[in-house]
Amino acid sequence: QKEVEQDPGPLSVPEGAIVSLNCTYSNSAFQYFMWYRQYSRKGPELLMYTYSSGNKEDGRFTAQVDKSSKYISLFIRDSQPSDSATYLCAMSDTGGFKTIFGAGTRLFVKA
Amino acid sequence: KAGVTQTPRYLIKTRGQQVTLSCSPISGHRSVSWYQQTPGQGLQFLFEYFSETQRNKGNFPGRFSGRQFSNSRSEMNVSTLELGDSALYLCASSLRPGQGAYEQYFGPGTRLTVT
Image 1 (cartoon, chains in turn red, purple):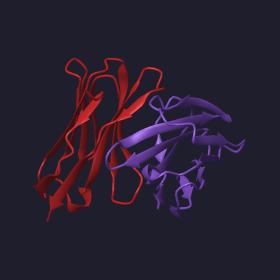
Image 2 (tube, each protein chain N blue to C red):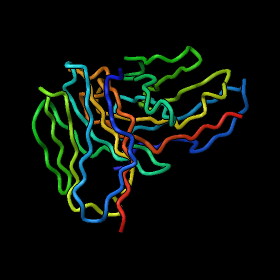
Image 3 (cartoon, rainbow over the protein chains, first blue to last red):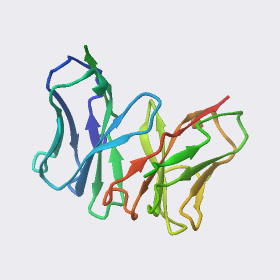
């Protein structure tokens, strides 16, 4: 079993939809949780960075961490065709010395 | 502020050759990490450098090596290239080591093709 599980998709939604992307993990030592967006032929771009449990909002993006369920989510409101990309979750332990990435979910937002 | 830069962006090599990739971190960032990204394995950690010292290493063979210079720029080297080394090699920088404890920013990557 992988330490971080992420459905690779692809996920296809119409423009304006609310998108929910999720990752589960097994290592309770993970304390830092990140979401990256990666466009084709580009490096990953840091979208959200959270510590421990709770929610964090940035514009159309909301990150949620539920440590009791070992489950993290990224919500995208009013999705746009420009949001079409691969979304990678990542998480790291307390010391930050071990970061594991999910496989990435490919998202397509149709105009 | 300029982002992380990587050179070259694309590289084609033959089996058995060696290759050196370069990474310049964001100004003020002193930690550089390297990752390999492939469709099958996803993003895998290679190593992390801080103050010219390797702080952490992933599970890759000794053919993969790296170094960091006093100006925080980093290079990674792959010797005796194999077909399976074909991948996107990504460099990421952060203020301090401990990849997760500080926000990490990636470069555009170097696409290596081994024939």
